Structures are given as structure tokens and as C-alpha cells.
Length: 175
Length: 145
Length: 112
Image (cartoon, rainbow over all chains, first blue to last red; front, top):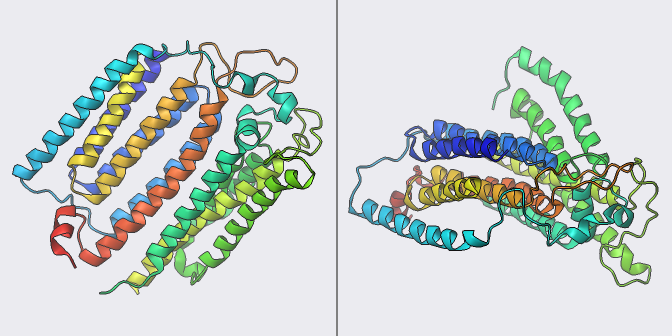
């Protein structure tokens, strides 16, 4: 199980690297799709069918929007010769990544091996959840009964994002 | 934005209704099978996006259509809020109280208020994503004009 | 354990893209890659060996189930991710209409 997921995540890393370095923006967007669709397979292997259903549709709509934006404007990557400022940002990125990697090494001591973690947080959500909520699907039970506040908050964030898009696109810009 | 060829239009006519029905199925079986309001809502929006892409925005005469979708979105989240507050009206002090009778677990009419939450969250998600898409389409229309 | 490291490397790839790229579309792609790696990490934390998907069979309710809490969190976060990505693309297409380029350096120099 862990091997299969590792292979898929490896492909996702390759797709991400190509998406970052591609000259053509359209192929960068499509290569970004590799990451999203690979995530769908990972969710299926990790026994999360709810997430797989949502992710496959969301990834398709995201790709439609991104491809529409890229085809509507320029496909050229703004590529210039590496100058001193470019080296400075690359060095900054490597320093930040090294710091984060150090914290991963420190914290990996307390990580459980894959599949052997105990359900410390949510044992009470699983025990007797069907009697408490009446819902056979435990994810729906957690989403709307035990964690109703979170769902309401996320729905509010969704509305805010929609209002933001409408505000940005409906104002008439100065030429 | 012009539409696509006749083949695509005819196939879309046949498929879009089925996709819409599948979204409704996912939403109302949200407490029994994988899926629920969020998944089904995105699928509902997907069926409309399929129609818009195949027929093109010329065919649909989009002017200020996103006013309708934002209305549905706001009404749906308002209903969710009222349902969440309805537990308070019964004299208890619990937000998001599942006060309706639970029924037999595993049947379609069961789980108290959860199917209602699923339905209204589904409407809200579908309307949100559709209004984002419509805003982008209308923006492109105005630019090309 | 390997898969956690690979997941972290995916996150670092996205971070590298956000810091070093100059094209706005590529920054948006890198941000969504970082987002996907976080979703994957949360799903990995909830996984248990030999567990089944969190759908209870009323006839046989005593099985081992995958942790439903991270799945519920990720489920909402995916939809939010779509909305925020669309908002980012709206900002980007607005900037392109105003300045005619995706390059953040040029946009910074123009000050229109």
C-alpha cells in the first residue's frame, strides 16, 4: 500500500517539477493537472471515496478555468536570462527549504508509521456515531453534526470568495 | 464565445441531464453512500458548465445572469443558518442540534436534519461555483465586445 | 514513512515555485500544488492498516474504520480551494487586461 502511494506521489512530484519549469504556459497548466488527478488515485487508495468524488470534479473545473485564462491571454512564459536578482531569490528559496527540512527531520521522530496511527482525536466520533447522528456515512455525520460550526464557517468563506470574484470582475477598470 | 460543432451539442443534450440527476442522487444519498452536499453541488455546477461550454455564451444570452445564482446561494446559506438555529428555539442551548427523529439507520428518510443540511449546502455550493464561472464568461464577453 | 517525506518534497516543490517563478499563472499553479500536498498529508494521517472506508454497515457495525475527521476537514477545504483558485485567476486576468503581461517584475516597474 505504502509503495503504491509512494510511486504515485513520485509521479506527482515529477508533474509538479515540469509544471514549474515548462516554457509554454498551456503545458504547465496541463502538467499541474497531473498533480490533481494523481491525488484522486491516492484518495481512492487511502479509503476516502468522498474526497475522490469531490477532487476529480473540482480538478476538472479548475483546469477548465485555467486553460480558458491562458488561451485568452499570452501563452509565453515570461522568460529572461538569469540575473543577480534571480540568483538571490533562488538562494532565499533554498535557505527556506533547508530550514523547513530541518523541522521535518526534528518532527519526524514523533510521526507514526503509515497505517499504524491511533485514532486519538476521533475515537469518540466513531464509537456510537450511528446512534448519535443516525447517519451511516461517518463523514457526513462529522461534517454536519459534530463539526457543524466548521462547515458553516467554510460555507461563509465560499460566499466571500464568490463575492470577491464578482467584485474584481464587475468593476470597470481604467484604460 | 461561439459554441462547438453539432456532434458535441447533441451529445451534451443527452448527457447533461444525466449528470444533473447524478448530482441530485449524490446529494440526497449523502448520509448513506459516499458523497454529500459538497460533492453533489460541484457535480450539479459541472452539468451547467458542460452546457455553457458546448453551446457557447452567444446562445444563452448571458447579460446579468449571475444575479440569479447569487440569490440562490445566499438563500441556501440562510436556510442552513435557520436550521442550525432551530435547535435553540426548542429550549435547548445547542447550536446545530439534530432534534428531528433519527429513524432507522440505513434508510433514505433517516438521520434527522442531516439530509436537509446536505440539500441546502449542495444548492449553495452549486450556485457559488456556477456564479464564479458565469462571472468569468461574462467578463470575457465584455472584453471581446 | 517514505510517503510522508515524498509528500513534504511535493510541498517544497510548490514553495520553490512560488518563490522563484515570475509568471503569475505559474505562481497560481504552485500554490495549488502546495494545497494538494496538505490534503494528501491529512488523508495519510487518518489512514489505518486493514481499515475500511467510513461507511458503517448497520448489520455489522464493529469494523475498523478510517479516521473520518481529517476527511471531513479536507472535503470542505477542496471546495474552498476551487473558489480561491478561481479568485486568484480573476485577479490575474484583471492584471493582464490592465498591463498586458503576466510578469510580476514588469508589473512592479510599470506602476500604472
